[in-house]
Image (cartoon, rainbow, N blue to C red):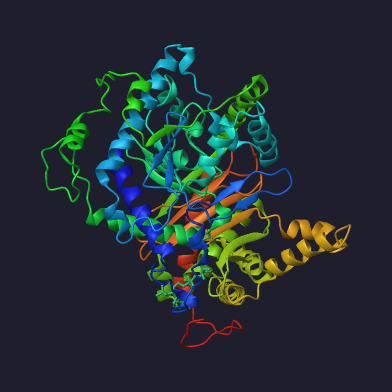
Length: 577
Ligand code: COA
């Protein structure tokens, strides 16, 4: 676990160096935006970015900071790990990841791991002096609540700057590294409630939510843009605070890390494998081979004795009054409830992938969007406002807009499909085939105008925000029920394509909705479907199984179809949309 964490830190430092030096290779668009250079600006938000809670609107703290430390979360405690001299100037000159001593980083991580573990052990044994408040839980609170608590925390005890200093260290750090190393006595049993989930789903749940206060949710700081999570049981992933950048840039970061790891494999510490690509030095190598993760391991020294052996790690300390302690208890209860209410299904659809869809001269993205519409309609009897993120990075400082998918054409096609299904025997009608082509053509049209800046959503949002500044009251348009429905995204979707074996997911954005990311690969499509357990209408499992049925029906429809033109007229040869 710690060697893996070391690799990520080395890689991140190198990645940051390339961002700062503007030597990160240029990103180019694919598919409909093929070959277009993409704006690289949001990479600058990768490190240091911090979403500061605010009672009105959260603020994204500037990335101009020059600190050179990360914060390591272990056993619900936070430690500063300095990577070099501060302030961060031109820290690593060249080949930053390689210059950053692996042995130094590993050594510090090992100490943090031991110190935090010892603290946690003593705390469990009832040693009040070792009780550390699980302050990370505050960041799971409703943003307005957290904003108030943040103020209380910062202004506690007048001149005593303990809390302000600790908060500042987290705000300023490059990223938070979460070592999910030790759970409380009952913690391991807490996951049993999720027996029906696959290993991958459980891992994704840990990465997205921390899996509850009795597991790792307190071992997080959700305001930070980048949290790298490394678990003792091999779980590894990243949790991002979305306001600073998009999933696509984070995917690149992860894909490059996977390549870096392949080039620099981790030697098995329990074998005599000396062929490691990294030189850990003799002293540290001996420490590496100590089986600190084995249950038989006995920690010989007190946390303070261990801390005194190093000056590069510093624990973050907190002062909490009775009121804040009570708020922390409330945050814990709410976090537990939130985690339990989150339902995630990862669907590995293996019947076909983009190769088949392309072979039908169809856009894979539009195909998947229609499959999602079809599925939602089957389950809920209606179409709903749908969000699909469209990258606007072909424009300077571009972020995303929304590709909408609940079109009249989709509705007509779905009606035609359902009509076929009601007939005996089932036969896909020409009406359904023609309607399908119309629906897909419409979807591609929306996709195209949105990625080229013609989507309505950002423009409307800009008008609304301007109106907020200019007028005392919002214009009627934005108060109308139809506008509310227009932005009530019961289906929040996003394509995150990768061949590196990385799975990406997120939550639903409204209570009665679904989150659904998808990764169309050549021969399969991976979906991450999420919803809320306490919503009676929705179910991630039902959505996933219905989606399989929808996709298979669409394949059958394609295989049975004649070639139609854009107006739905039959023709001998079909030209790609
Ligand atoms: N016939 C045959 N092939 C076709 C086709 C057709 N009619 N239409 C498209 N294709 C091909 C494309 O050429 C492309 O091929 P390539 O992989 O060899 O380049 C492939 O199918 C995929 O195209 P498509 O599925 O239509 O989508 P796209 O790649 O253009 O992507 C978006 C569309 C909207 C997903 C993309 O533009 C985008 O914005 N991505 C960013 C999403 C994002 O931000 N996600 C993260 C949010 S946090």
